[in-house]
Amino acid sequence: MSNLANQLVIAEREEVARAIRLLLATPLIGAKTAPEAFDLVRRRREPVEKWFDYYCGWSLVVEPRLGYARLAKVRVATDPTRPARRHRTGRAPFDRRRYTLLCVAAAELLGVPVTTVGLLADRVVQASAADPVLPPFDTSSRAERMAFVDALRLLESFGAVEVVDGATESFVDSADAKVLYRVDVTLLMRLLAAPVGASQVAVAPERSYTDEVPSRFTELLTRLSRERRYGDADEPVSEVQRNLWLRHSVFRKLVDDPVVHRDDLTPAELAYLSSPTGGQLLRRAADQAGLLVEERAEGVMLIDPDGVATDSRFPDDSGNAKVAALLLLDLITSAPGPVAVEQLRTEADALLGRFPKWAKGYRGEDGATRLVADALDVLRAFGLVRLDSGVVRAQPAATRYAVTRTSADDVEDES
Image 1 (cartoon, rainbow, N blue to C red):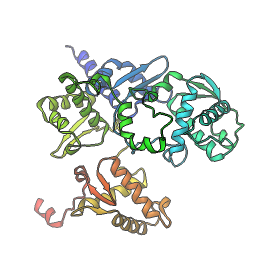
Image 2 (cartoon, helix red, strand yellow):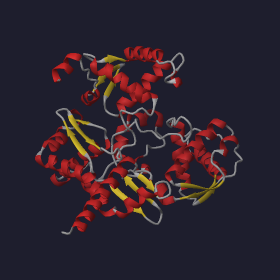
Image 3 (spheres, helix red, strand yellow):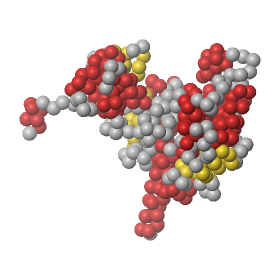
Image 4 (cartoon, rainbow, N blue to C red):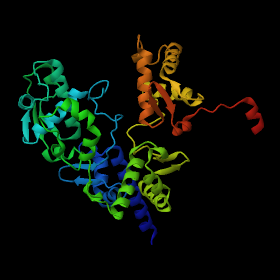
């Protein structure tokens, strides 16, 4: 093989690896919002599709003419660390009301390729009134209009809704605002990454949604995420289907979670990962995606040295909560046992007192409490701690960030 051919093969492998990592971080890539990333995924579509299908069982849809690539990351597990966020200052997470309006608005947009904010709001009012479970949507309330705008802005960021004329934010100040939208119905339908339509697992209307849905949430989520390629739940699963499920379930966790602790795996998953076949596939998948494998007695971590495959980093000084998380993690890992949240509040209060110009958003009577809560959210999102009944326990991966102290005697010994 000529030198030029070698260079082309290496370049292709690097591009495929980068495309995989880009999709892991952002499962929906649009040509308008990320033209370079979309063009890369489009060009390397076939090997990238095969990688996700073989290792994770996830489908990748690339629409060159419509201008988007959508990776359907199906998992039964819920992830409270990645909420939808408002596209305004503060990036606050969506509350229950905004999620409700998002779902109702998306359902009403399916039948209208072009609409206005006023017409859409009227449709949401009517849909809410027709459903006895949904609270009414009141467009005369500024708080309601703001929640509705947050839902629409999120759909805009996905590319499912495009503003043709006007500005969505204007609806906050006036229910008579004029905003014209073009709707991408195909993309709108692909936003829900679920093999089973939600309407097929709905609770019967005559039952109590308030009482039944919370108690059956795990069951309903499992039914929504059921994939028939692994066999029907009411029929025996073949050995081939079982092995396929083990491969996909293990790799979904490896590429989607910051760290996979061995005690978080089922016995069958742990046996698969520990087998010669599982280990070989792990190293091959990581190599093809440009990732590094870190294996320890407690678990396995896939690391992206370029930071492309993640939407968030730790350690990171980009926010006060992440800085506090790193400082509090030192206290948690150095403690002989679990640490009470109250002890962390005392430490946070001392930090705020020691650095009066730092973390101005956490000043006030409950500043230390909020800082600890946000810092713990960061640590839990990265799989570094567990919180149970007001007690924080360090996970094995937390030792990667433990502070090491060097004494003068150590320096003299080394010299």
